[in-house]
Image 1 (cartoon, rainbow, N blue to C red):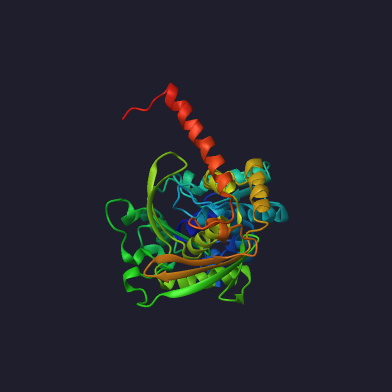
Image 2 (cartoon, rainbow, N blue to C red; image 1 turned 90 degrees about the vertical axis):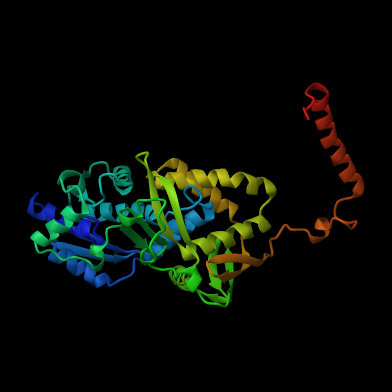
Length: 394
């Protein structure tokens, strides 16, 4: 069973053990969710797990999932950096591997019956090992509210996490935080400040701006202000710095897999900064045809990830396309962080196709004047042809 240590998975683990009478092996992955990871493993044992596998997969998550989405420019409905959605296929992959190692017949998760994650877990498992049977306690047990789940925990004297008193739902990893439901259900009400976990209130952020220079190599960030970092440490440092300045907050209404809309509050300081910097570097190093074409592919990639379609030939093929496109996306981008905003100060690449001479509009050089006149005449001819046949009204 995929076990997070939260209210739902703790109750679900106990239910599988005591009500269904199964041997339960809990899988707890460290993907940068913070807190005491050892405490999560102990909570699983207290809830009745026969064994716990606690594994650090932060590097795999960042390199094989988050950075792929970064290269793809993937933001769901132009707001969500897919933090939870990207983690589910990784968790499912680890579940299947552990199930084979243990000789398990079932794999289970604690996703709610109206949520997106049940699709992401179960579709990924089906793609990886269709012989495994899925169990989703929250669709079976008849506990319809958070209050009922909490009552179940108390009745069975099960460990309750520190965040159990809240009414909203929250999911966190190194790529961001997602919060919804509870006091966030009214889209007309501002999100309470206590919802935010890794970002400061922009109004309370430092009074002085902070400048960063991020270096990329073939589409992946490798250093901050000249200091090289490993992938996990780089994202953690950007989360710290950008979060301090209130960067990376999004409050949006999005379309869920089941078709209804949901108000979601996101925090993604590192992802927000990296996407902005990466976009700027692509504008400097890729031609206009690619820059114009990519947004449609980015949106499609994001929808594939969101809609539980990670293990598809289309997503794999798009990754190959984006990987090839990043061959010359190397260089540095200078940014200024201030009161929740990110300002681009400069960008540089040895592979830049920006031609300073050609861009000077009031000086000769670059493109010969005769060539410009010929190109302009072709554009005028096209407009004139339309005007003779379909004169515009004015």
